Image: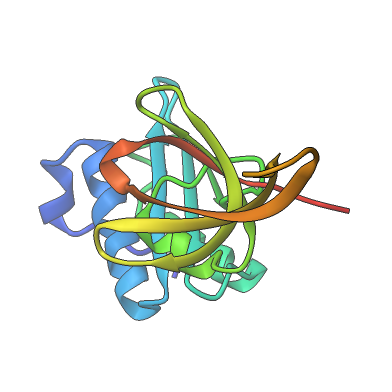
Length: 167
C-alpha cells in the first residue's frame, strides 16, 4: 500500500483539494461520519476534524487517516497529518451535531448577543428548541415561582453553541 502512486487526477489539484477528495471518499464508506474542519497549513501540516452521528471512534480516525496518507505521495508532498474527533470544548458548527446532542444542556449565543442556556429538546432542518427553568416573581403576591421557558432558535441566528458539561 505504501508505494501506491497518486492518480494523475490528483496531481493537478492543490494539496487541500486532493485531501478534501480523499476525505470525501473515506466518509462515503462510513456515512455516519462527517467533516467538521480541514486545515492545510503553509508547512503542509494537515489537520482534519471529524464527527459522527454516533460519535467517533479511534478506528474511525485511523481509517480516515489511512485514506489520506496512503493516497498521497511523500516524494511529491512532505506532510504531517492529524485526524481527530470534534472535542467537547469546540462549539457546534454542523447541523448534524445538534441532533446527536438532544437531551443535553447547551449554551447558545445568538446574533443579537443574547445568551440562552437550556436543554436541547428538538432539532429540525431550520431550527433548534431549548427548554429551561427559571425563577420569576409571582403574578400576584410576594415571592417567586419556577416557570418553564422554551425558545426556538433558527440556525441562521446562532452565533455560537456549546455543549455544557455538568459534573
